[in-house]
Length: 155
Image (tube, rainbow, N blue to C red; front, side, top):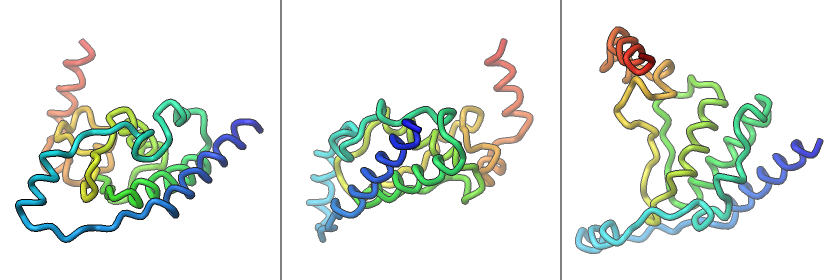
């Protein structure tokens, strides 16, 4: 019961962020844009969203409904702060995979400048949690190569 209440509070916090932190996009000339890009930095999630990685419970502590609701709330909050999200799975991955990827991104931090897109693609198919659901990955990485890479890591 305590965990359910905590998850509901997190969802409410992210929903509040989504409603109150709307970013207004500025029209910039090329020189201003490059200057802004040059001066942007990676900031912790507490600075961008007011919620830290440590506040997000591991996926295995949540049921499917909680994973789905929390993931949607996190996505809306991130988008409201000026960062887009583009998963490589085209909506095929279960909520647990998407939540794990989002939670991991909280460890990495967010770009301080709005207008960026988190695409969760490092180009390293063998280590990608979306590989089983990613058509592009399957086109560019052969299953034999993936299996060989995984076997090499386990040796």
